[in-house]
Image (cartoon, rainbow, N blue to C red; front, side, top):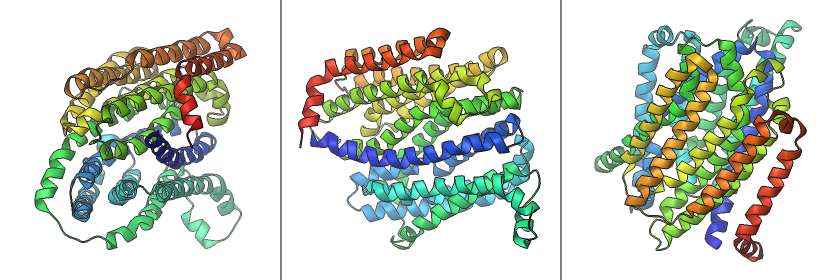
Amino acid sequence: MSLYKSLFKQTAIYGLATVLPRIISFILNPILVYYLTDSSEMGKVSVIFSYLVFFNVVMSYGMETAFFRFYNSESSKSKVLSTATISMFWSTIAFFVVLLLFRKNLALWSKINVEYIVFAIWIVALDALAIIPFSKIRAEKRPKKYALIKISNVLIYVLLNIFFLAFLPQLAANSNNLLLQTIYYNDFQIGYVFISGLLASLVTLLLVLPDYFKIKWQFDVALWKKMMHYGLPVLVAGIAFAINEHFDKILLDWMHVDMADIGAYSACYKIGMFMVLFRTAYTLGIEPFFFSHASNENAPQTYATITKYFVIFGSFICLGVIVFADLLKLILVPKETYWTAMNVVPLIVLANFFLGIYTNLSVWYKLVDKTRIGAYISIVGAIVTLVLNALLIPHISYMGSAIATIVAYGSMMLISYTMGQKKYPIPYDTKAIFTYLGLAVVLSGISFYITILRETYIFGIASILFFGYFVYRNEKETIVKIIRRK
């Protein structure tokens, strides 16, 4: 049981590092709603950030996951650290130079202002340089330091956005201060969003920069080849994941959906991010745990137990967010003009829940060094995403993107489970998992899509209480053991 407590402690701290920045960034959503010109401006920001995700994936090229794999398996951890750091450093410099040289071509192709392209290039370069130092912090199980840096990054980003969007125009208009007059530009709100991101990324890199001076700058070519062989399939999977997670905004733009609708979709998408908080925090804590306990004799049973309780906690979050979605929108999306996209919320919450379950089920191919399988599964998900978006967007706009997301992640989840049980059998309690998952989906769907039940909240609250009782009745023995454990 101490094993699970250790995992829970790490996940809780990593969760703090994820939840607090997300909570802080949630404050930014209503700020953007108020201070960007209209919802079409929000749409433009979401499309550009979607492109950023793809650049981040390419510039990391699977090295983060490869670092974890070899840091735990190689005898010389310093050699793994130095090799990964040198690789990331020079590849980032190369990417940075090439992207800057072709910035005008990128602007013409994407129809994005070249100034925003330059800001984006700087952001992805600074973020890439911080990847291995961050990975080292996680590998050394220093979640408090990780949390501090992550929270500082988002806090700086949000505060700068508030300053540039809310205060700078008034200060510049009412002051003769030369500095304020110099940094203020009229109708440059989107630019200020990206300047804020650039400055936050710069501060983050400066905080982890001392690690660059602590490593031995020794490059092991043979080790690097093994790391690249392991990591490149992760790159493919990362690109496929980016398609599943973010390409919908780009596709909506390409298929000429009104930018205001994209803005509404992106704003309401934020409500579904509560499940992302749980999934992301869990992933940060679980990945090092999986690798460090892979050699244990009872590892499969441990993984099975963890997965079941992930589903239980995730079901609670799924049910709670969907039941209270209309209350959450008052805080996160405070303009009624954005509420036209509220119907996507249950789909986005459930889609991210499926992705979290997939994360658990994907442990088998990472442990047997078959990361290419993860790439194949992600490619299947990406194909589903692209095909369904192409088919559905012309008919039902952004609802087609939401449906494509949930089908893609559901497909990946089922494929990984089926393949994993053949290659690395894990004794999942499938009956309990499907029962908890199915019950949460049915209760949340009824509470949201039946208007009279959605407006009163009586059914929703009763559903949460019933689900809690149902879990306690079935898991009472384990819950009591955890509570009594000293």
